[in-house]
Image 1: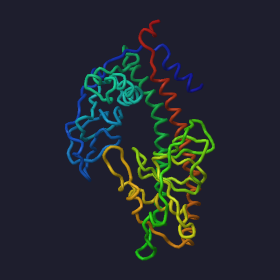
Image 2: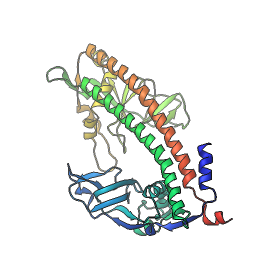
Image 3: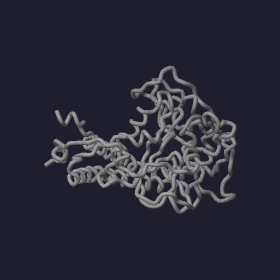
Length: 381
C-alpha cells in the first residue's frame, strides 16, 4: 500500500479542534537579556533572534522548549532545545506542554504556518515582529480532541513521517558541509606560504580593478550571457557582454555578498555593484590562481567592508590588499591541483544539493498534506 493511501486513511474523517497555544503550553514567555550578553566559551546555549544560538555561562530556563525569534530578519525562526539555556528579551520561549499535544507535532505545525501568520498580523508597512497576544492566541489544530489516545497516536505518526524527511535532509546537509570544509582545508594548505618563500604584492599593482555598468535590459530567462552584480549568484541574464572570461569577480556593495569571490570562465555582463579583477600581465600572474588565492582570503575582504548604510568595499582599500605571487610555474601547479580537486568535490557537492532539494520538496509535500487539516465546518459538511 502506498504511503499516500496510508496517510489518507490516517486523516480520513478526523475531527479537529483548534485551540489557542496558551491552552497547550503553561509557559509562553521571553528571555530577559540583551543580545550582547553572550560569552565566549560559555557552557549554555544563548538564544537570540539569530538562526543559531550563542553561548553564555548563566541559564534562566531548564525545560523542553520551542524557542522562537521574535523580530529581525529571522523572525519566526524556530529552535528546539531540552535542558538549561538562556534567551534574549525579544526571543520567545514556549514550554511546559500539556499532555494533549506532542512537542514535535507543535514544532512542525509552527514551522509550517507561523511566519505567514506573523506577516498577516503585523501592521501594514511595518517590519514583522511577534507580540505576546499573537503567540498566545495562535490556533493549533488538535485531531480527535475527544479521544486523547487516538489524538496522540495521530500526532506521533505525523511527527514520525516528517522527522524521517528532516533527518535525511540534515544528514545530506552535514555531508555537504563536510565536503566544503575538506576542500577549503586542502586549498588553504596549498596556498599557505612561508616567510620569504614568495613575493607579496599589492593587488592594485598586479591586477586591474574596475566595476561595470547596468545593462539596458536584464532578462529573467536564460540568455547567452550571465549578469554578474552584487550577491553570490548571477543577478539575471543579458543578450550582450561587457567583460571577457577568465575573470575574477567580487561584490563591491550590498548585503550578504561582500567577501564572496567568483570566477567567470566565459564572457559575461559586469554590473555596477561588482568588481572585476584581472591580471595586468598573464605571464606573471594567472587569473585562475588569483581567484583561488582571493577565495582563500575572503575573511580579509570582509575586513575591508565599510559599515553604515549599505555595506561596501572601497576600490582603494581593495587595491592595497597584499597577495602572495609565486613563480608562474608554481601558480600553474597550484591551479592544476585545485582544479582537479574542485572537479572531484564539485561532482559530489552538486549531487548533494540536488538530493537535498529533492528531500526538502518531499518533506514539504507530506507536511502540506499532513498538517492541512480541514476546518470544523468542512468536517461537519
